[in-house]
Image 1 (spheres, rainbow, N blue to C red):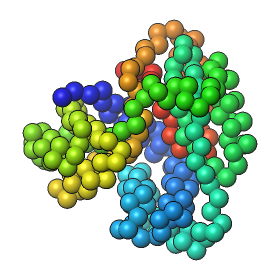
Image 2: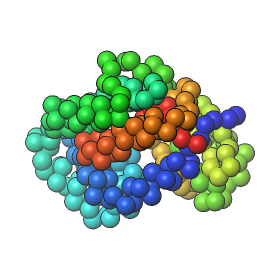
Image 3: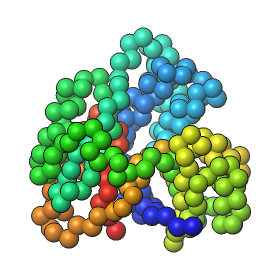
Image 4: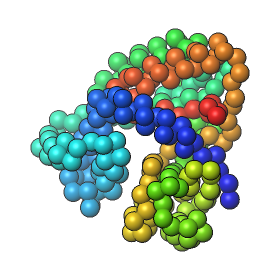
Length: 243
């Protein structure tokens, strides 16, 4: 089985995130607040919260900061007014971009996202204009060097738990699941003590597009940088082949 692993990019993004912990901690803090509001403060009974906690730890958020965030959210449930919004549009040369945001002011977020597209010579589209080019999947990335289990054994653990696909890349393993089966697969890996570099439900492009024009590359990077710097933006998906 083969996939299109982006482990190198994930490592690159993590390095950038490590250099901007304030931004990452703000994002995770909002996610904790929403998860607690929706499912309560106990991660053993709130899978969404347990996912956010795993993300927090992967980004080196201190345990006491996580605990404070959960307690604050639990005591402030009625006042949590963040909501998820999604924007779709096109970057230069028709690169498809999806932006997930978590905001307490949709007008502010919409204006900032629109500005990021415009400054990169792109444009916001209507809902659904590019999402059909992506598949919503649970994606789990495992660093080969940190995994003691043989590839065949790891594949069987994943597939037996309901994974749809398993691929071995040069420096990583990638497991894909149906969004509804993601929790079962992740719990099976946790039971085996398998550490993950990334584990989330994400949008995976059906096809990747290469850019060779320097102007287009510069404009796309401008849009992506502006979106990454926006505290309201939780995730950005695109079909640009960065390799």
